[in-house]
Length: 437
Length: 137
Image 1 (tube, each protein chain N blue to C red):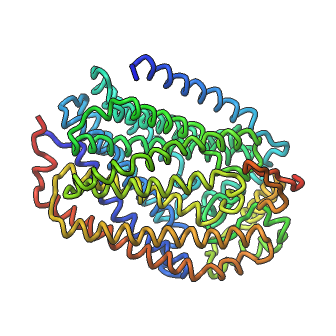
Image 2 (image 1 turned 135 degrees about the vertical axis):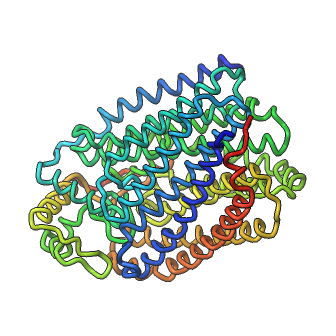
Image 3 (image 1 turned 90 degrees about the vertical axis):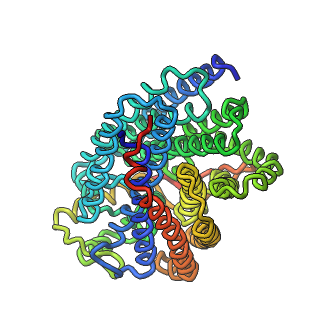
């Protein structure tokens, strides 16, 4: 009997998302009604929501990698993988406790006391040891192995960079601190995208039975476009921070390489549709198709807000949130759910199709509401006539729409997640402790 | 694409990233006014109370409360002090001590001294970039 490490991470991810949704709804309500549940005020609810959502993405992304290693029967240093999971879960629990008790000390998105970064780095090091020692002997890596390898290394490097503020050199100037903070965050998001997109490509290969794409030239061209953007396309976050203009100019030029990806999606649209008709009965596939549509929408938005003249109006507004939510929910979560459904081969259609439509339709309204409030706020801020309070009052109806659609979105996810947990428990404990070899 | 080509492209990108990063660290973010000890303490208070969950600096942060980049020059220290001492319907009273309030005001004064946000005096070029015409502090 061997514990399936991939599945431990999957169940951790499903639990993280369930909690992330609850805290997300709480934070959305508090945005309109700030005195709602003051014990977990907005300044606690927001980091709880964000960290648990990030944990969902990382858990399933990591789970997908372990699942591959276990499925291919090439995993080495299994004990290091188990320690990785234990370290990951215990650190996560400590972070939740620190937020609930109001013990902060870090910066946005990593608000926990910086000492908790140490076990995160240790656990990631163990992940790297297991992965690289397991795949070392494989010849002619498919692109998803390149992506996973990149994601693992880049997370380690950029997480270190994200903690560079503990040194005076990086924090003695607010301009340098903000610039390097967002440089690291941009690449760090790229690192989890590498894990998630790699998982997406892997299951696409499994569904279609076509192993040639993951080794094709176009797959690697897209990977290198992604890597270029991961390294250099982050500065749209800091166009308005008074750093040297060349930093923003490089990001602006690099961001336009994403037009190549947009163009390819349009070019391949007909092929995607015919493949959708071929595989529409497969539940993972419909989530992959949904992610494709969200890639298109969010990429278009990302390219627009990378144009400095547009960014001037959108920066510091809910359009940034729309971009983040569209990417993490519309793209990442759709791929991750597709991976879970594929992995467990669950087929009860009603409890998957209903939440699928609830999630995607409510996400569309949620996304549009955020963009709408962002446009209104951006114009009002640049005009400079209204005070902050007047601007917030004027966009409140749109924010209420955002709150209601967010609640429905969370409901859709919770229906799906409870169904997944129910299915999971049907086969417990064999699905965790079953033999892998 | 053969393995050699993949490796060449990969390591070229990595090398470019390393060089680029060293430039960002050393050349791209120079400012003339370093933070004072009191402002540095204020920054620590700012972090320990997770002010960034609701507020922004240069438009970066949460959107529950206003951007604080130029709050000192726009509203004045007394205005900020009142908020910090009493809280509001939207902002909890964090029970800050006098020296913590003083340090927070020093930190916000330091941030205020670095530049202006939002940018309201600008020119847009034909290719979409922005020339910031505001006089930097």
